[in-house]
Image (cartoon, rainbow, N blue to C red; front, top):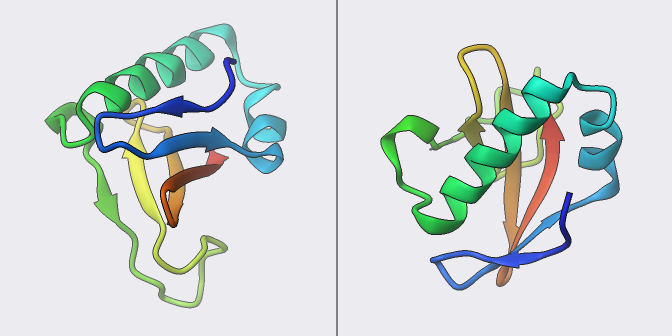
Length: 93
C-alpha cells in the first residue's frame, strides 16, 4: 500500500493506522479491489461504480461525523472523512 497520494480534487489521501490494521487481514482479492477503487477515486471521485455518498449519523454506527463511503465491491466499502485538504481513509470492511 503506497503512501499519501494527491487526487483529482487536489486533496492528499492518507490511509491511517486504523485503516491499515483492518486492511492487512483481508484476502489478496479484496486488497486488489480496494487498490483498484482507490486508484479510480484518485482519478475521478465521482465515478458511478464507486457509489460514493455521505453517511448520516444515526448514533448507531461508529463512523465519524461527516464521513463518506466508497464501495469497493457489493459487500465491502471504505470510509473516509475530509480534514482540511486531506481525505483521511480510516475504515474498510
